[in-house]
Length: 90
Image (cartoon, rainbow, N blue to C red; front, side):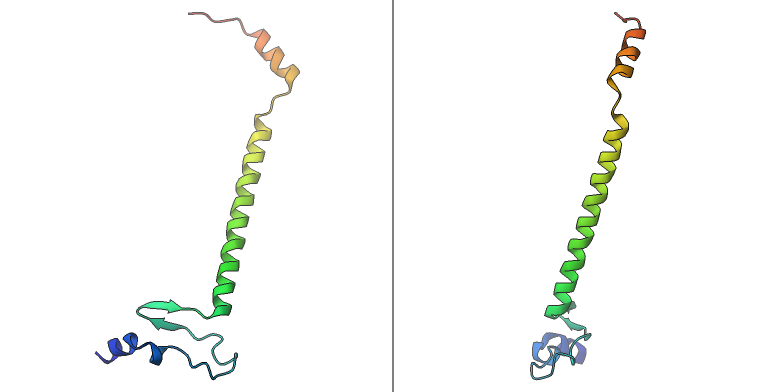
């Protein structure tokens, strides 16, 4: 029951603002079962998410480009290939 009371009281879980920046650099605070991040942690997390998204987007672009390059057929080769096959009619 004491643990639940601590979770519900925000002032006991939140860090005091009187401390220096180094005091609360790595502290993880749980409030209502959720992790509360300080500004530096949020910024780092967002930056990491943006980088992951950008890398994923770039890799998908590269894969699509490679696929498109592999599908491209030289026009002369394509014409020869089409002209060698007899027309099929049902």
